[in-house]
Length: 363
Picture 1 (cartoon, helix red, strand yellow):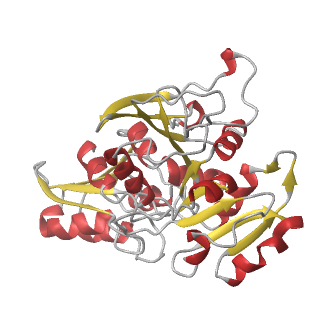
Picture 2 (picture 1 turned 120 degrees about the vertical axis):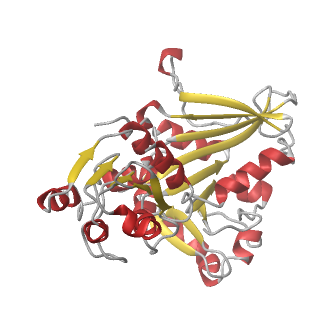
Picture 3 (picture 1 turned 30 degrees about the horizontal axis):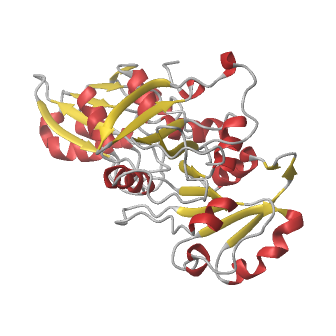
């Protein structure tokens, strides 16, 4: 199963909103005779690849798969049909699939046909692997990655606003890797004004993320890279209904302008995430600035954190820190990341962790 999970990981960024799935086939003597993974959205599932590789050697053997085999016709035929045709006598799945058209149906169909089925091997690892898929299914909202780069004294720019570059080339390359596997990259108005970012992945990957700007005021530059390239790479601008008309020019240049109800602090991250989830976006990356990152933290809307710490000091009372918003009043209420690890990233330190509420355990 651990090998199947490693195979499943190869589909990250290519299969969403589907789950990542890996499968291996053992013959009747327990020898590995086939393996596969779900390689792209709309393509064959992992079991199909593994069983094709195994051929007749699967008869009487075992199919080990990281997710319950599907039993419905979607973009591809049911995987349960492929299992039954193979003659395998046993299926071991890491976890049941909560997708409504499956949800235990695959297990029942196989058992009714006389196949021995076991569910729950390495379930915690399988749920962690597909946490974004599970969140989208369970809540209708995407998995939220929060990312920033800062100096050792906790600054994301100097007092004059200069921020290029805090982190090194290796760290910036890792950020582009993140962009290549998410459905959207989010920034606030301040980042557009100060940095004029392009927000694309370089080099491009299999997935092209929508560039998203969150601005309650609707006051965006008449000329910037995002607006100039809106017809080439999607741009979505979230603003309040009262200020949407300010963005008529952006709409004319190809951006999608989405009005949302105003909240006490401008725009609710939860309202933004609800709309992104309705688009079946599975992973979104919030890149800043401080106001947007603070709003997401205040709303407890972050799931996974990527922080790059450069060995630099800039000082200055007016130099900006990475996270704004209200914050907490007491240290005991501070967000403490779970499963937090650090690693060298060129000359920087990369810190990666999860919100405690986002840790997916077996159920």
